[in-house]
Amino acid sequence: MRFLFCVLIFTTFSACASGGPTVEIGGKTFKVELADTRQKQALGLMFRDSMPADQGMLFIFPNEAPRSFWMKNTRISLDIMYFDKHLKLVSISADTPPCRVSRCPSYPSVVPAKYVLELNAGTASALGVGLGDSLVLDLD
Image (cartoon, rainbow, N blue to C red; front, side, top):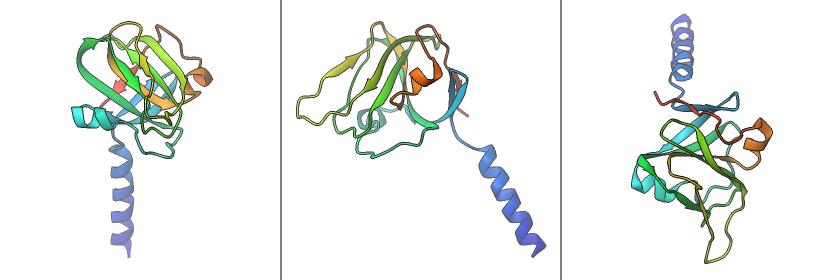
């Protein structure tokens, strides 16, 4: 019995220690799914009915370039935040609504970006996040 208890405790602490990639913005930490391949970037957060408040998706691109996102097949409203290669917030599309029509609008960055963070709509405003704020990555 003591052995099983030790195994359970070890497993719990191991799971907590390997919590996956996170980002910090506005003083709050979010667990993120990484969209670091073309396939993951194309799918993004499509077809999801909800996302926990402490989670998001981080898109990582090989270089800085103008970026444009759309909300086709995305069922939840999002804050789309664009960051440059120095992890500074350079553009934001706040409270971006889902697209429920066949021709969805695009939400482009104002300037080139290397990283894009999607969080639940209203999060950036609630945290007081604005242009020039820094993103902290922990991708281990």
